[in-house]
Length: 450
Image 1 (cartoon, rainbow, N blue to C red):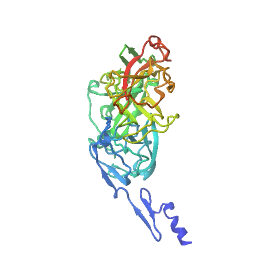
Image 2 (cartoon, helix red, strand yellow):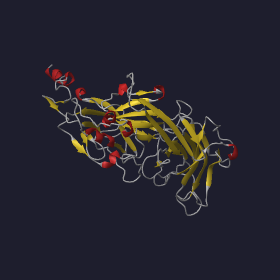
Image 3 (spheres, helix red, strand yellow):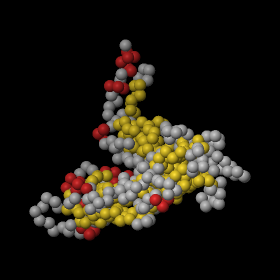
Image 4 (cartoon, helix red, strand yellow):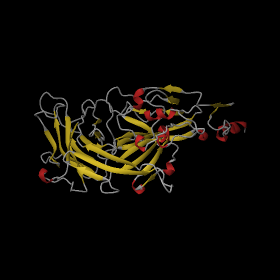
């Protein structure tokens, strides 16, 4: 009877809010994770650059941890690109960080892979400590290579200028509207104008008024003390213009902000923010199928303002669910290769991915004189009955398969290369046809090597 009582002590929250409870055979122990943690301070955890060398894994991370250093002091709350954070599949926090009065909360960390921001997941516990930092309880990772990311933006949340209340925040006085500075971020699905809260003095997010408010979304980013105004990449809606040529897509939009929306009169200038994001839709990526047969990725600066990421994944099954793992894979010539090509995190909804030419070479040089075409002019090579094109010109992914083969001669590796296009489905038909000249009128070429 007494043992039964002891077993329920932790469930009765005997340790109190924010304390961790440990039940032993003859006693209960309470511990504050804010006083018992391990510091993690690797700068690469906050990296957004894709890299395939010096990969890391957190499979040995068990217990409470605190992030410090230039990489960031807390986990990101949004999906991170594959191959960022010094690993293959970066882990990010699928939820919001707790407040001080919430104690220890349970959350989920998601791993991004193969176009799925939550391909794998792991339970984590988080607590906000009185010092303003968070601590995290990890229990390893689902697989390797995976690491827990940090958000370098969170470093700015500790800048203190003026304490008008119990909370510290950045505070400056801008006497002229022209002094207000913004940061424009060109994403895959939207344009984002970011303002420091201090630039609007004590303006509350509820008082920000956009003359075309139904077209934009206003977000408050507490970790960075900023307001973010989001404009979706949709042409011919809410005044957003799309100007295209054979190599670029330029989205333009204008924000009109009233700084005194409830006043009868005003002497403040109207704040107009002109946003323009130019996307260069040319991508080049490489994947050594003999040394790194799982996936290849590269980020290309798109006109200096925006970027897409293309990558290829190699699967074991026709359902395109089981990825090859490891740094080197030996594949029998009797095996079928299932290959997926993706635009990471999608893109503007009216674009689809069209494979134009996919071929193999015996070296990593895509211009090698020896080429074996798997897909040519967007159609499967009819001379090879093992080739199947499952999806092409339908969405932001393409799927095809082919039986493994070996080049005749002194070659022991096979390299795949794909030329592809982003096609505007609103302006033209993107379904591949037999003739390359009839394929699409407004496609933009991409080169992808694997």
